[in-house]
Amino acid sequence: RAAPGRTLEASAPFEVFQIDHTLVDLIVVDAYQRLPMGRPYLTVAIDVFSRCIAGFCLTLDPPSATSVGLCLTHAAMPKQAWLDRIGAQVSWPIQGKPQHLYVDNAKEFHSEALRKGCEQHGMTLTHRPVARPHFGVVVERVLGTLMTMVHELPGTTFSNIQARGTYDAEGMAALTLAELETWL
Image (spheres, rainbow, N blue to C red):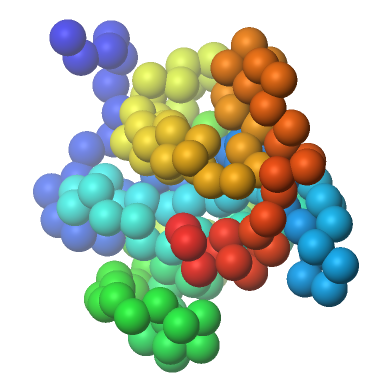
């Protein structure tokens, strides 16, 4: 059954994006000595109509107006040059800005920078109800799916301590931030 409540629906591509962040269930290593650095944050923008990931931002910095802006920039830009640069031999033809952003109530989504940026670019900003994650079901689902896939990578922290058991996430960590970005 569908979760109770209502989320913003879309009748066309780029009408509504849902954006959210998650702490990635993986420890990354530095590119030189391959020593553990910590867990990165992933910000994802997903087009509600097509369910396509429009853009993302992967960083070691906690979620902020900057990571939201970088995610939206990634969504708006043509991706072929970036894909070529990271060596990904795929097509990702999604580019453009949404008419509407649907976000949760984290402080970075209430920032003056995001409000002004949306106003400047003609985007409507709507916050979903407090403590109602099912109102962001589209982006929550894709983040959950990505984290399930991450659990198969070396250095995963799994989703909780019970699932991790005796697995040495730091000792097994093998991917740099750039390598994780390419994998994503």
